[in-house]
Amino acid sequence: MRYYRIKKIMFFALLLLLSAVPGVIAKATGESVTLLNVSYDTSRELYQSENAAFAQYWKKKTSQTVIINQSHGGSGKQSRAVIQGLEEADVVTLALARDIDAIAERKLLSPNWQKRFAFNSAPFTSTILFVVRKGNPKQIRNWDDLVKPGVSVITPNPKTGGAARWNYLAAWGYKQKQTGSKEEAKNFIRALYRNVLVLDTGARGSTMTFAQRGLGDVLLTWEYEAHLILNKFGADKFEIVAPSVSIFAEPPVAIVDRNVAKHGTRKLSEAYLSFLYTPRAQEIIAQNFCRPRNPAMLKKYAANFAKIKLFTMTDVFGNWRTAQKTHFDDGGIFDQIYAP
Image (cartoon, rainbow, N blue to C red; front, side, top):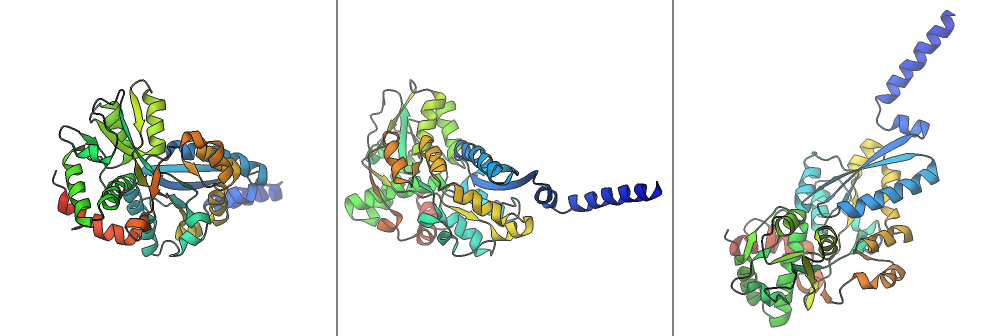
């Protein structure tokens, strides 16, 4: 009897010891494992759907339950949270490459992170459109309409939000390509931001300012966020306007090497981001009005996307590192032209 009592005590002591090591119980029993995806603020709905699909796929493949926690905020803010250790992300799915490059510069992940997955580690693309109030009372059709007297614009702060930087660069690129002049583009941006009523920290905050608080005549936002506004707040209240030209935006993904090594989640993290390229995940992307990389899905859901001429970062700005330093770093062009 005493032998069995000692054996029972040793068994529970072993359980306590294993539970103190993150991930060990999950891996030993196949019960559950947790992943943290630190993302930007308008990706909530997309990743809620992707997480459910991946959890189903992983359960079928491994018999293991995966719990994917999400964190959302302005893309620049989220990047800094990972750098400062406030968010121990296994993966980051941010609005632009520069925010992941900033994490790589702190040695938290590989400097070659864009080569790990297809299409520069961006499983979908998007662009910037306008949302106006039903009937378009200010007759806003193109970028030039945003600088007219009496037009109030809602867009986030490019110092903190990823969509905000895409908005800014889309407007700049339109004017530079139209005139062939960087100085004309700078003057155009100055005039545009004179008409900006509120600078929220992120794109979802700007959505709430425009759609819920009723401020502004036009909102600059992601294509998929524009559709969400119509679906959530009513197509009888808002409509989408596609300008003549906009920017080809690539929100990328990456594994945070230091954290997955600490958590023992590298294999799971790689599977999670690889899953985003599968036909099932690509269909979810298209259903959420993000532009899939899969040609068949892009064709199948072509009606979801505006027919619009797009220019790339390299067409106008070279790369994100240059664009960030020139336009958004302290003392850059945005600081020079913006006066609250």
